[in-house]
Image 1 (tube, one colour):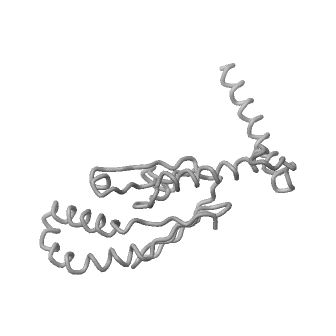
Image 2 (cartoon, rainbow, N blue to C red):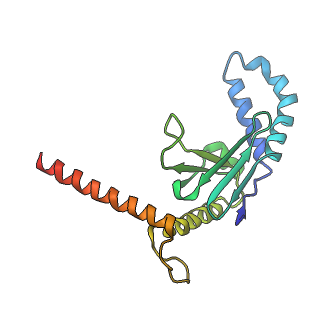
Image 3 (cartoon, helix red, strand yellow):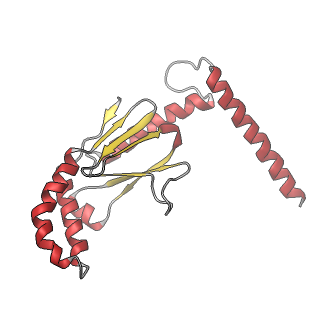
Length: 181
């Protein structure tokens, strides 16, 4: 593990306020507000206690959930971007959210693959993810990174380089064919 994300203690308050706002905006939800005031705080505290996010040398590992546990391992070489988001409520509470966008987004709406809300020093954690991603991507593309000289690709990396070169040739042929049409 390279870096472990820490989450702000205000996060359960954010979830509680967000849930109460949604309940207050619906006719069915309004009668549920007193129950949620009693039960919701415990649920959100348990959610907060079970949130974990670790940046390793090759992946971002996310574990969260109280009733329904979710574990995601996102390979760093699949991460396209890590966006910072701040809505009015998040900004008011001094929080932000990191949206991890990957190649082949798994969300049906085309949203982010994972969202980490309430990370302490979100810009620093985002930079750590992107820097490690660049190091991993440098190994796969054959680009030297860091102070150590690049020793050349290994067997697995040779296969990846061959695939990359084949894709470049295919793209060139497709571009040339589309010019002739």
